[in-house]
Length: 317
Length: 263
Ligand SMILES: Nc1ncnc2c1ncn2[C@@H]1O[C@H](COP(=O)(O)OP(=O)(O)OP(=O)(O)O)[C@@H](O)[C@H]1O
Ligand SMILES: [Mg+2]
Image (tube, rainbow over all chains, first blue to last red; front, side, top):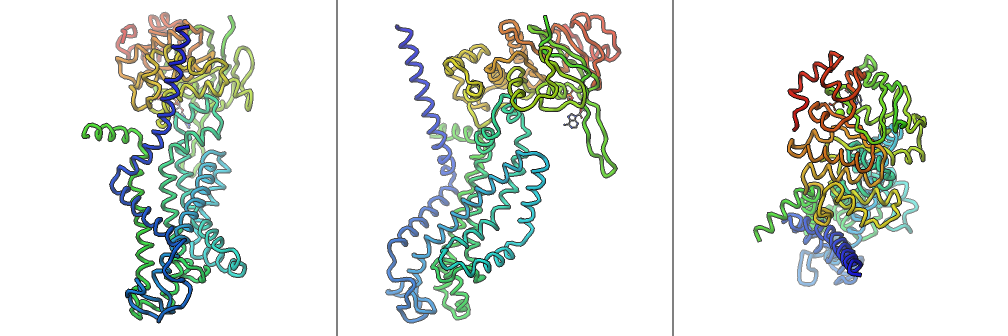
């Protein structure tokens, strides 16, 4: 009887520590990212930009598409950031254009990283010939200039774009943006699968899928996150570039089309800086926040470093 | 008693590209015949590059042999693959040389021992079995090690974790490729004692690979001396260490200051 209760106690002890460990892994991952001052700044910046974009979904002072005002007015009490060369309110455009810009950046980041991870890890974990074939495929996408692909796919989508919204833009950016990450993941996987701890799992009888999900993905998680940040950056930059080239849908309101119209109007020559600066600054801030977030990832990459630093912190406290 | 495992003229050639001119072949193993019986520890002794690790990796099917045969309990398993390979792998496990590389840095010690139990569909209580295994390898009390990560324990403890991991599968054969060479001298004896305990209590046959004649005299019953991929001498450990026949063996023994010295 006594023995039984002892056993129960032990089980309860095990369970509670286990769940504690699991939540602490998540907490410490986010925690280490935020303990780093640079990534903390990046995180706060990104959060502010996201808040800005969410407000923009529900509210803007004026209809950003309507030509309600005198053209090319500098900032004043009615138009916080002045008006465009066509008489739209710049601040309303900036606010309304935030959400689509972020949405495209992060969708491209997510899809591009997903494809890169799948292709890269598969290539690194398959037979030599398949690996070589995939490698050639990756390199083709890396060698062909992105501009060329953007022009090619852009003009292809030109005709059917009207009812597809942002889908063509996203597809173009993902097609041109996945290969760099795939090459990284491929070479990292190739080196990891030769390590003893992966050989050990093969000998123990782990399936390939299990090794990929439980061990390889886990080991390269910081690089996956970092790749997500960089591909998102590429998405934001690529959006402006696509709009700049005029192969996107320039009727939509986002920070890229704002720049397109401003440049089209030769805002930089006519001195309407309040039109060209706000979207430029917002895009730069978005990039900057993602770069800053990346700084915290080094520590995340190395668990022993993390524990060491944590101990040091605990001592200091 | 019949052999657990036996090799017949096992040969392994590596092909390496040299410049543009073509391929050079390295014979890492040359007609190797060894056998292992239940309940014994057999030593494979040889200098660096003699083919010891190659032999180990062929026996666990990480490498394919070029020619020759492998028998597991008189069954020819040279060409097995797929499902039967998976079944065979449970029976023969390997302990790696470097315990700092053979444990996944992102997973806890408990995870390392739990996985093989889950994979082999262990029928009893898994938590109890983990405790039992950890006690077996003297990681006590288990509770204080379970949630630790590999970098939080010593090299000797890592090697114990690894041994617990492979014992979880209940193998009949264990191949230990220089399991103590990366460890502090003071920690070696404990791990070697553990190998002896495994042999005595579980009846597992162990192939102990080393270049260190001092440790070989401590644990092995018989040894094979490997030189450039060839077995140049084999027999009872004491016989060979006291009256070596082959010139290479003599040189090896001379190089080691005192084969009977206990570390
Ligand atoms: N994957 C490989 N490709 C080509 N040659 C190899 C490979 N693995 C081993 N060799 C060669 O085979 C020979 C035997 O190597 P092996 O690793 O088996 O030696 P070893 O006895 O384990 O040495 P050590 O004591 O240094 O571990 C060496 O000449 C080595 O260069
Ligand atoms: Mg070796």
